[in-house]
Length: 535
Ligand code: XMP
Image (cartoon, rainbow, N blue to C red; front, side, top):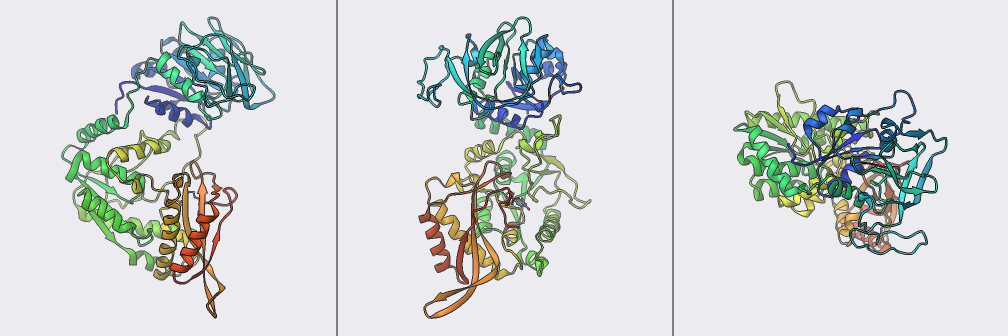
């Protein structure tokens, strides 16, 4: 899609480059992460309002470290270099970078020494002064003196290039920030994109608005409007097929495409019998009935349960489910008839991986609903309407399109579904039991006012039985484990400190209301070394 204003972020491989993009987008300014060596001519053609050079693990003093095209400094487009980006700016323009032997890592206090647009009018109410006293909101136009920042660097700038002046210093860095106001080129040694720089997001906002002159036109309502036009122009009178799973991404793609092309959208929903309690019906009610989408449900519970009979190895379970899904999906897709496009819920983090000089952040786990490996007779062109969006933006689009909170705020759910939460043999009875236990977990956690802070929560059915008592009788029944975690992206996670009362009601409800369970345990392990799922 064409964007009337945007900021280019050149990626030098920092772990947190994505955070720069998210902070800029939160300021309602569109931005894209692009290759570190993008040519000046290409940038001139695409005309960003500003350029940000990210941090990165290399040293500019080393041969072969990733460098930008030096001509970008002559484009007249405002530039902000962050950490490695600042050092590269300084070195390219004739300054000197000192190769550090020791890393400076962590919080530092920085003093501003000159007026600088990046620091203008910062609201300091969410940070403390050097003396631990909360600071006050400043009138717009004033420059604060002490700022808390986050440092993570070895090298540092030792001599500024001609035309530059230092605008901030810290104990360890005489040039904690630099500017060439005339050419609108800025550099900061610290990381404004991380939360440990409390005013960092505002500084990036200052760069976007005060330096680059952005107006802030990146709004989800506008994204929807523009995207609908783009989809209509691309699809024309052809038809689009979408594998709908009920998860956030495919649900938002469905709602968006339906708004754009109505009856030309055909959704295939595979009910594999391994979904959560009532989920299949919810998907059918919402998309089939409420939205009126042409929905083709494959009621294939028996096919999946039969294919999984006797299988206990988790990887085998995943393979069988993946393969069965493709077979079932393909059969339904053939029945839909002539379709040119296959829609997918690819998101921006999946797209950015390819631009970093060091390969980018490690690959995120993708759902098996991303239908790769379809049979040769099913050939489609791809349509990926969410490929510019971060997850929180996808949720905002979903809300704007009228999807209910239980869909847009839905927690992640693994492609193989409950199969990887039933340890050991999978039978219809065990699926039924786990669905009911899982429902109790979800119902009780949803009563917590802060339930959106819990990243993922569910029940796991263990392959053992334990002794209990009921009245005068001994029982020998199943154990259910409860898992609830706090996480940002699923790569690492902490077990969630659920209040005792919530744990108590979960346990009581499962034991009293789910037949066949006489013991409930809470999983208090973090990832790593554990994983979020048990299989
Ligand atoms: P783990 O268990 O690896 O999970 O800590 C991290 C996140 O990924 C989800 N997950 C899966 N998602 N197919 C998926 O689509 C899978 O096979 C799969 N295994 C785990 C898990 O729910 C968590 O959100």
